[in-house]
Length: 503
Image (cartoon, rainbow, N blue to C red; front, side):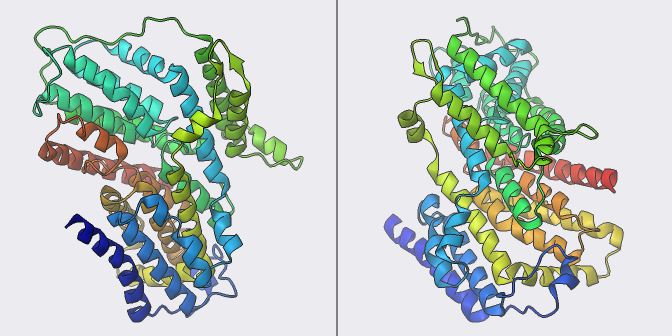
């Protein structure tokens, strides 16, 4: 039966493709400049036929991504085979999307995270943060959440959760005669959900915190020629973390007693810091400093801007790759090199990197075919619904955030961002950049694609927490929906505040 179900899922992709080709008739009537305020140049080769091909191919890919008829990485290779046949780009153009600069920023971040994990620095940082918060249940949950979110800003939220869950289970087991599989202990539920949710929330904080933020960086740069610097992104993400993390903590612990009978054993790192850990800490500090200062702050000119003035173009990916190459070179202590390629390559999530490339290839196909223009024309009808101008932006933003959260609950957040962000840009272009800034709408979409809290399969941290067997599915969904609602409200408010502050 399962084999039959899988064949049905596989068949749904080509069926969706054929349905679009047979029944959808895009029209590219009107000039691009009328709709886009000059933001999108419609390529000379764009046509209604190519727009239909692009939409049909995207639907095929989206169906396979959502149903996981094939491994997501395998589906992500489909543009390489399909797009040249449909004249959506030459093989060189399509494959070039898979080598986008942002892919290498993500690769560098993953390798830096591996260096932290290989030396044990991530565990030391986490336990140091947890140790500040005491050993009562509510404060301990907060400590684990702060530690998880802080690490998740810089390393994979999956790796962070994999590291924190065993520490949390050790704390829980210290209260029990042996490892318990009970699924309804409020403290265990709050602690494990706190780690999963904090890993997702921490991903808001930096451009390398989660795949959707990486996808946003590339697509926004591709569409506008502009970039959002590391420091500028943190001005959006960090305030969101600072409000959402304590709010989520309150939701999780509001039913917990202030104290539990007996002591909760607090994990402590007793061994001294090794030379390997110190080396990685220095490398991490250098990378973070260079990322934060490349674009500058307000009147302070960043070092990247100074280099651009003499013709040198350096990006965040340059910093990431330069630092990790140094870690492959440096040999400290008895371990040998900080990073070893055979070990590092075996642990790298190559499928995620391929999926990022597929998202960029789809985005290029949207523009090259004229599909972005057609979507923009369709969305432009919103401006003729009689809604007051002052309400149009909040309504569109709210709709984008809701759709992004819902889609992310059932599909890869990277895939969701890759599909939705070009559409959101088309909406901005159609309705007017001045009233509907593309940057703000796309940031709202990217943040929302990271905010999947209600389904155990929504994000890897959710799945890891649920796999412990200590959280009933009903409790997971109920609490997750509450956190989803908080995320929706806070993301919308954040973007509205930024729009008010910038113009």
